[in-house]
Image (cartoon, rainbow, N blue to C red; front, side, top):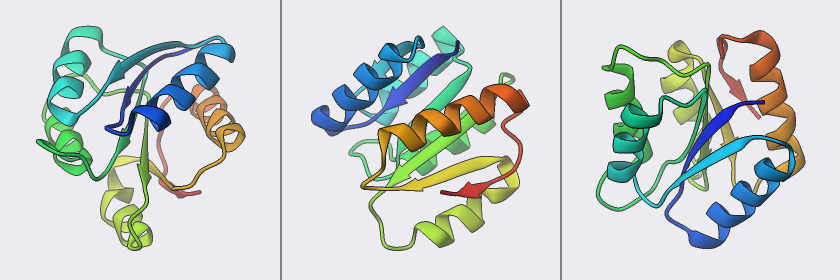
Length: 129
């Protein structure tokens, strides 16, 4: 099972993801915004990073740029977004092996994606789920 950092400013969505993935056997670390998420990423070095795009302070795209600048890369990254341009986001981030999942999303599909990331081990290959 993976150590997963979930960065999401909507407390309800954060709680749903956390409960679902914990029930699946993962260790979940929660962050309510990108600034806290970056601190926890550097401290905890999770296997998988799940982040929202639109957040106050530091958005998910800036978080991903800063994570990419560190010496430690997670096995997989999942970006959740309710933006209409999620296909463009996927294309922009595709080179870095990021999976984009539009909101609303299915917790079951998120779990399947996490299992896929675990089985591949690299998180390589962008997927617009």
